[in-house]
Length: 98
Image 1 (cartoon, rainbow, N blue to C red):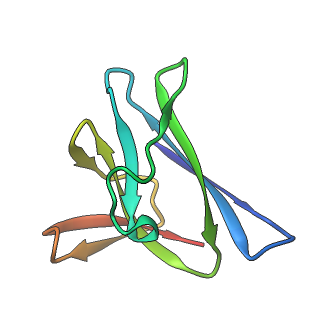
Image 2 (cartoon, rainbow, N blue to C red):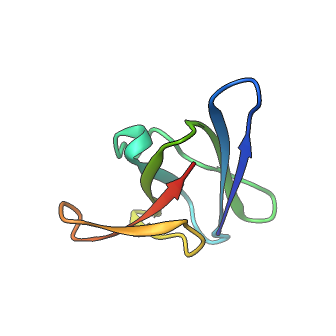
């Protein structure tokens, strides 16, 4: 899994690209505090090589919690900036700092 950040000079925004290698998966989404944990809001697109990718414009100088939803199972990204325990989920979420 990978996270790529591209800061824009013209706006207070960072383009964040999420990549999840999941050749066998049918559906992959990224859910988090940036989309109200909506499992259908940010589905990633499957590439020819089997990696799912998607890019979001997120406000910089902000931290967001997130996880991937791969065929109904929540998965963390080992390349996240940090991890935060969430009592509601009773699990650790990934954190991205922009």
